[in-house]
Length: 627
Image 1: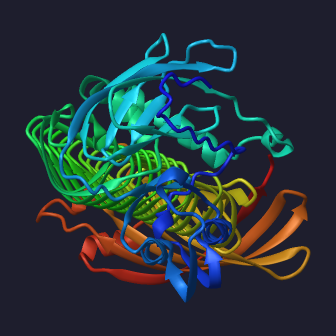
Image 2 (image 1 turned 180 degrees about the horizontal axis):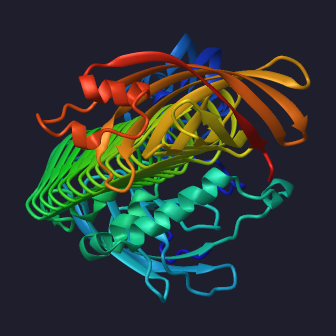
């Protein structure tokens, strides 16, 4: 390293790859008990306990002065104030605490510091951060390695922090006055630990940072210097900040190092963090964490976590976790988890877990688990599990299991349901249904533990539960075709589908100038290898043959004994209790409807216009489970 001015003192700290600590180093608590020990030794002891480094100019600090101190569970900042008797200031930059002397002069001196930065082969290095934490000045080296910035300060010794990825961080001290500095940075030596692949969280953070920096609003409004500045692990709390644009305001571009308690941005604002409230005419952009309230006319963009509420006219884009609410007129995007809610007029996207509520007029999508509710005017989508409710005007999709309810105007689909699916047209479940599927047209599941209620119900297996519908199909259940003869209809056909506990019956009957069409439910009980008992209840609509005149409704309860004569072939016979409700005909029309068999209970009921009950009989054959 070459320095042209002899008054410049150089101090460099080289260290291997460190994990950057997000905590405030001055707030770390330590235990210290020394008797008549030099300050330099005390600083080393604090470094070891806190796992960080001190940087200072030995010419300005009496390292040999001996001190006696005893303190338990004390903050590093407090012990430093006592050591230096309030005659120094302390600033954190990355994994360093920079100690600077308190200026004794009130007269400021204007001057310029410039220079060139190269690597150990003297090749120029661009994108190097040169930061003066005491005066809060920051510049970035150019393509030719040059840098310069103007200072107006009364500090006699200025500490400059120099940082570039993959190179060792360096701190130098320069005196006040115009000067030019040539510096060389050295690549960090890789230890054996450096060969360990990066953790998934670190890779994910890098991808988030890259995506954040490539956003059009960020590129349009945020200077590159501010993006670079925000990468430094140092910050300063600002009570109130005003800006027109990120580079035109009270913070200039060093707002990449500022955390604002209150921020007012006429058009757009950018800062390292927020701990209070921020209002922007177009956009609010936060590099790290936001705590409090953000309100913007168009967009809120936050790379770090959000603790609070965000309001925007168009969209909100958060790259980490949200503990609170996102509210926008059009769209919310969340790359992390959310504990709270997303509310928008059009769509909500959560790329991880939702613990709360997503409310959108058109679309809600969650890539992880949802604990709470998705409420959408058109569509809800979830790749993980849902514990709560999916409510949509059109459709709900969940690739994971749903523990709660899926309610949609048209369609529900999930891999597993433990609760209820309710829709206007169809409910589809790829695995188990533990609960209820209710729809107008189609219910489908693999294993049913509960109830299916719809026009068509389909299940591979009914482990426990029932299907109630016009057509009930159980792949691993039972089905049969029954052809029988009884006292009313010479020919009666019953198609039975379902399982042993409950099967549905489609009924067709004909004969004696009558036709019958009906629906019923039944159950089978095994009495051994060959015999079985069955009970059915069937409601049949009776019409007059050819003219198709409705005559009335017959309700039959049947009890049968079935005998398996051959495999898939059974004989059946039993008794029935029948109740007929005749149609009320107008006067003078009854005689025209009299049938040939005047002794039939149905014809007698039609003639006298009264409901009638009788016991009947039937016998026939069954063909079961052929396929």
